[in-house]
Image (cartoon, rainbow, N blue to C red):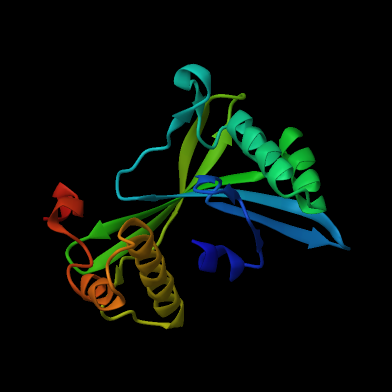
Length: 191
């Protein structure tokens, strides 16, 4: 996801405190001032956006959720960009996207991008904006696809190290080479 957006001219800034927060927080400057904000959340296959807050009433990626995360980021790391981004979000001047990566068959992945249109603080609707053609993991056809697969593998490697810290590198690499996509991850309509 990061490569996709940074290649489109967005500047990435840290969006997480620990393991919680915004998966992708990006901005664009014009004449030295932040003029564009993009909030993106990435999900694998059929994973859903979560609920948080007291009583689990605040939907992930809603305006209220984004504001709460930005305020936490400001406390954690008070840099000027967070203040500028927060003001734009509070005024509803930002873009929100759901970036979904889904297996297609046994050797391909597909990226779908959904526009999240806020309809108030806690609710929104998802509108499919773009669906890229499936990318063969073992045989990407161009430099864009190669970059996406490289980023995909880097992310998988990072999470394998994070969740299986006791495994030696050679075992991590074996997992990387074995079953990119497990049968349980493949949606029924592609079997």
